[in-house]
Length: 159
Image (cartoon, rainbow, N blue to C red; front, top):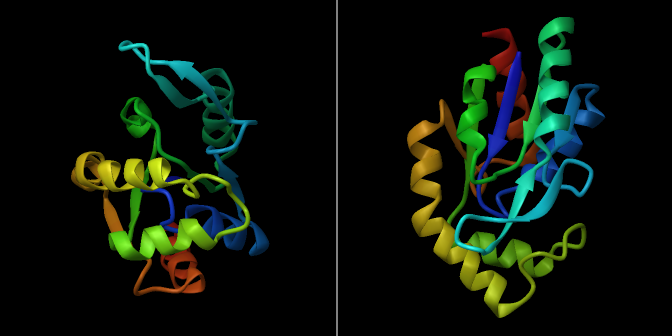
């Protein structure tokens, strides 16, 4: 079983991945330099994208060994991986919650500047609807604790 958690910055993806790993699951946060890198998109703009060769190898390994794998992250071309995933789960929260979280978090510097916060609001309007359309499940992390989100994700493995 391969599950992708996706969503905007501040929805709790990293916190949920930490909890899933604590519970003993294989959990990989793709929004780290080990798994992602800055590239340039077709319009010459910077783009934080997954390292496809590493992700391809990880997904092949997970398919071969049959062990559950939780991935988290968001990138412009993530849809090309949906056929290799059993579930795509959108984590969401209202804009005010996202901004409060990114302003106060200590494990990630993204979202501290006014420009980054404006970008988050822009992505909330333009990208999140696309993610919602392709997700199998949406969990509102403003209403669920990290433990409750993790419980629901574990339930996907038993379904």
